[in-house]
Length: 178
Image 1 (cartoon, rainbow, N blue to C red):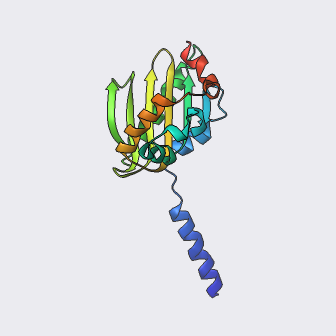
Image 2: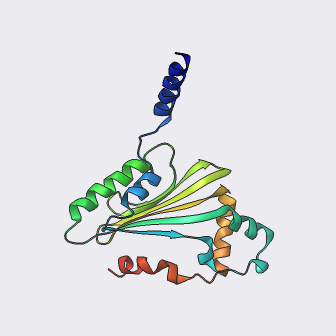
Image 3: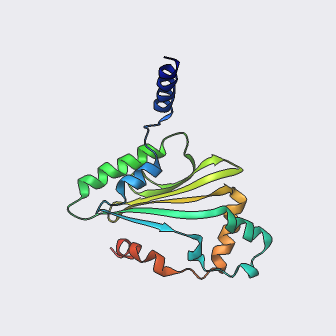
């Protein structure tokens, strides 16, 4: 009988701990195979940078960057209603208090925002969200370990020294060429 209560307690705890709220990670997984989206996972290798020419701070910033996920909705004449619905879903997800907005440009119908997850000194994820009513929208998640605003700024200097492997970004060209 004791075992039955133990199993029941364990199952109850598992159900309570399961979070059914929408997150960007779930949104990415749900839409990766959707024909209206372009999904891309980009590794730090895309930067194609000579690590021996980087400063210690630049190397630390590069090490804090794990990967980048890109999900872009490509708008066309047939999917305008779905575009509005999907954009509303992303807007709702980004309103969660877990996503702290740093900057916003433009209006709600067209523009961009930058948010992060974590604390000021231990950022787990940066989120760039841009939408344009003629093209669609894109959500970029930059995932890392213990990123902070300084390491992000340092990462910008690394980007200037990089020789970006554009082959990894080819799927996005069709979205940009519209």
